[in-house]
Length: 155
Image (cartoon, rainbow, N blue to C red; front, side, top):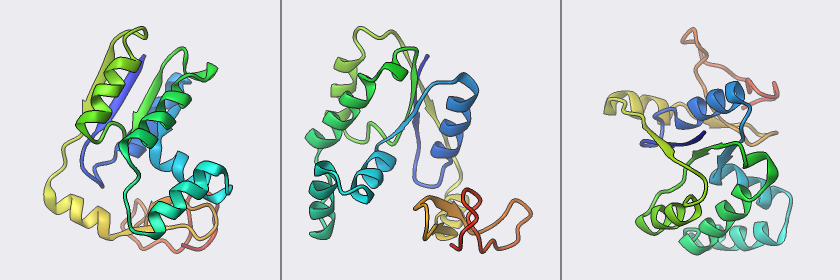
């Protein structure tokens, strides 16, 4: 099964993609996660991405498309995958169409959330100082969380 989660920042794409991938034992492929991991591990890709980000430039379509193509070629993605954060542009969508010609159908899930809720979610985001994960500062009970739900370190 091949899925693509789409929607604005804060809609819950990453959260839902993670749940679906875990339940169906297929990889969640997030371009943002791949780029952050590469920068953190100081790989050649990471150095290239860091240089772009330090200049305030966006990572280009060609680089993102190459990353996704390489990731989809891995053995764990042969049974299916969940894409989070890709495609974002028309050239990326066209490239994805080409990549998937031999892979079967793709289910696209568009998540719609009211604007007020998107704003609330985005302004409450925090980045964990240890694992780099983006998390909500609000716990499920509405209280402000000071610690990362993933690794337990301070936000």
